[in-house]
Image 1 (cartoon, helix red, strand yellow):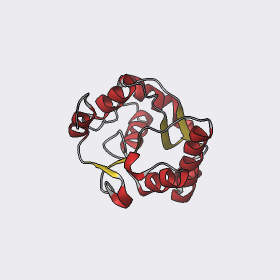
Image 2 (cartoon, rainbow, N blue to C red; image 1 turned 60 degrees about the vertical axis):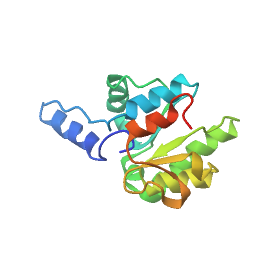
Image 3 (cartoon, rainbow, N blue to C red; image 1 turned 90 degrees about the vertical axis):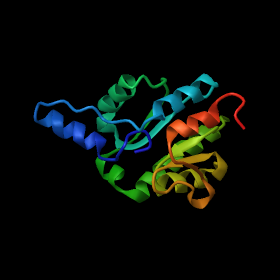
Image 4 (cartoon, helix red, strand yellow; image 1 turned 135 degrees about the horizontal axis):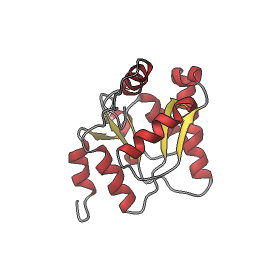
Length: 160
């Protein structure tokens, strides 16, 4: 639910497909524009999700359907791991540490859950570079994102 409006969006799509219907996962207003603005400024988006790797095709199709910039997609290894908060936190921390260990910078890390906050901080991302949307926004010194459309204004050249 960092980009989608709810953690249940993928489940709705899969359930609809199971009965031969279509459902398009809803994206948070302004989220795609924020990712595009970051990419236009030179950042490579890395999509880190707790979704299990078996839903990679649906996730990739959704990213394309929303016209999100291309970038690596990292998914959990199994459904069991995806359902475990502890495993999700460790997995996301490993992914971010791998990025940093390669000598790359994390310009901004976005999330919506406590597992995101814990993982990013444990990996060494400064709290001010962690942008959290949803009920946990601003926790542990992270940067709160109340609305991606307003956040987009902060990313405009010359803002602040």
